[in-house]
Image (cartoon, rainbow, N blue to C red):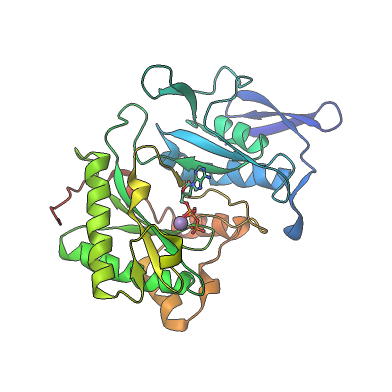
Length: 308
Ligand code: ATP
Ligand code: MN
């Protein structure tokens, strides 16, 4: 991939990534204190996972979740592309009228640049910037209400998968890198966010009606204890979901990791939530061995049936 470096002044390293020169700072800073995971390791992770992550970022404006002093320090969501960006970082206009310029992370140098901003998490909308009214997929954000956890999400995800299969749709699944799972139904056909939202809500309602003790589509937090909340509203055009392969800003450098349906079923069968927790080094090992388990999300063309 062509990453070379020379040391300049203390705390700063000039690197070349795919022909672009950029300056990295404070690489020794520990961003995940509980894991001793440094900014250098964050940058290295993104540089290595880039070939698998970039297709998922392509054409979408990112919302960066930045942690300049690490996961225990203050953080902020940044939708506007920082004004001090290098000229080669591509941007796209978001919104009507005033709007703003969002960053497109279109290549490896841009991804390394974002990592150097301590943008630990990269979040993307369901639609690409050039067609903001056409989401490329439906997302089901499965949120466990304690004491429910990821295993309860696995059960609901498998039921959801069966329901989707019954109407001829395939879906991919990833861990959020936090508490739950994200199930994605690729579309890449003419669909609006109103339609994806309605579809996700209808599918969630079917699951909730079947198993009201396990599943809810109610927005109220007090409706969730012990249940899995199927958050259909994540399909709103203004919302984002953490991108596949993004780090999360938890205590350890966990990653939102694409997994196979067999892994989801295996975790549930064995009652072992730990097998669905993946940290940066393991994710790099997985993509080398398994490739991109979310590749179908990138180009599978499907049309939504009418569930309502
Ligand atoms: P978990 O599995 O722990 O729920 P998650 O990433 O799904 O992790 P959610 O709280 O369910 O987290 O939120 C879903 C998505 O909504 C996030 O991935 C993120 O992209 C976006 N999001 C959540 N909170 C905010 C926020 N305060 N500002 C901007 N985007 C947010
Ligand atoms: Mn969630």
